[in-house]
Image (tube, rainbow, N blue to C red; front, side):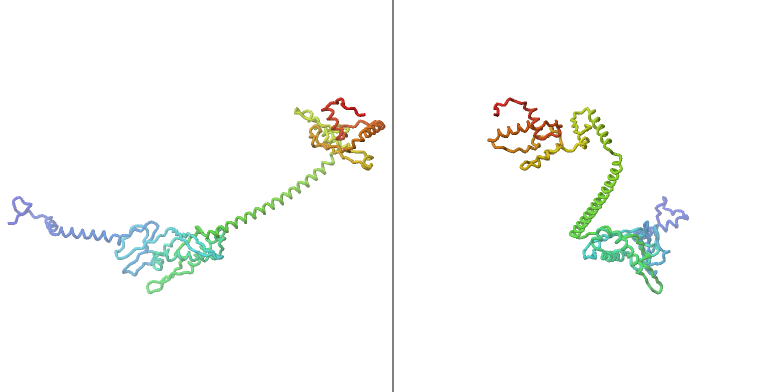
Length: 414
């Protein structure tokens, strides 16, 4: 007797519509679970092969294992997003955004100096030419095409300039020339393929968009750099001297023009200046000087109008130091007394010249005194002289009498 576990009285349960599905599940549930686990495992393992995500700014080139290889049709490129492909196919992703690579190249200048140039290359790929680029060059096109090509052009351009030009003035010209040469070479090189099913001929210029080639830095030997710096320093020193010479030339022209202007001014003004005008200006200056509250010393000249010495000495000739008769006598010396330029009160005693005197023997002193007395008695009386016509001997005697009054002589001369 068969026992039914779901029945309380060990009788068969009534047959329903779902009993058939229940019997199927009871029989095949373990197999279904196993199949689902295997399918899940396979999906997890094969997910990277049939589900590919294309990032932003990129494009995917499809390669079919059993469909002829690379799909060259630009319309079958995979754009940004999630794409499902067969597991045995492969999707190659290329970057369409602006790319920048920096590379260092060794070069030799035209004068034989070894240098090192650091170049920066900025470019971008063309979308429609990506399948051909993938078929002809591959994903490592930067190492195969960009870096070696730019390095060769850099060496070629650097060889046209000297080390000084490369180091100082020709950097921008070098950048432009490298870029133009790169564009020309890309135009000359072609990517082509001929076959039964695939045929193409595309220039590399249609594959790349070259924006610019920048020279980041140029390194020269230390001795060459120091020599270039010294040469530049000497050049600017020479330019400084040229500027000085030009400045002095302009200064001489300025002085010449100024002198001509002063000469014309004097010619114009001298026509209206007379002696009476100068005396009038002298009187005004004297009045202004007398009205000043400061301590002052006014020196009045010996002219007839009594103006200050600067303006009043034009009418009186300089006093002669000795008479013409004395200069003609033989055996006598003539002393020329210069008119003092400073007041006598302010002139130091050491600056005053001493009068020339002839020393007589001691035995003839009495005879000389007597002769001088007779000559003084016989000579006519002279007119009183002004103080400006005194000799230095008279001035010294005058100051001696002021400082030391006359005292009775202790010894009378016979």
